[in-house]
Length: 249
Image 1 (tube, rainbow, N blue to C red):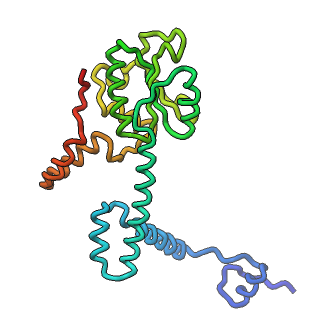
Image 2 (image 1 turned 60 degrees about the horizontal axis):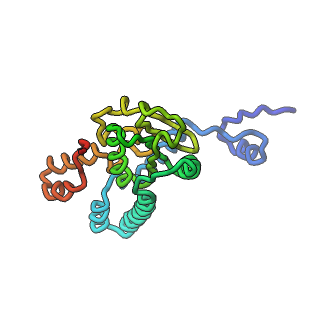
């Protein structure tokens, strides 16, 4: 005699059958799914609730913590952030200058190097005004974004017979491939190219994040925020970090 069993019923007999694999486990109820999603969201929010705090704000929170578990959580979060900042600082100091290369060095210094970082190549022409402009911006950007490798090579040395009219040419390498190229500066500011234009290229190719505090516009916005809040001393301290963006011949 065959007995029909409703596998969705919450009975002791069904529990026995489920334990022996005779019938499948009951699917979670909609309310259970919602409760689990809410709990996961709550845990994520708890773990990341300090992500937008500055180091000084974290220090103040640590001083004001009302219990040992809260104090330990904040201290652990600060240690993790400091470690991440230290690692990032090491990466940002890796290069820090423009590397002149020859054609025999190109494979190693550009193509192979691009497996580890973004490499920006300036195919230059010494007497060309736009090339002088890009060369000056390269010097500043190399100091500012030390995790990116900036390279200079005369166009005619890099590519035999390379037309002077194509200089300057900006090549972006990553993972041994040319990801982007700009023949002259026509599409990135032309004769009036500024630091923001080069930084926009870095953001567009993914070499620098949009919210990176080193970006010129973000630095200016931070100054405006300080001014709006009356922190003149902070503005004064940061004046030396922001240069005039016009090219000075």
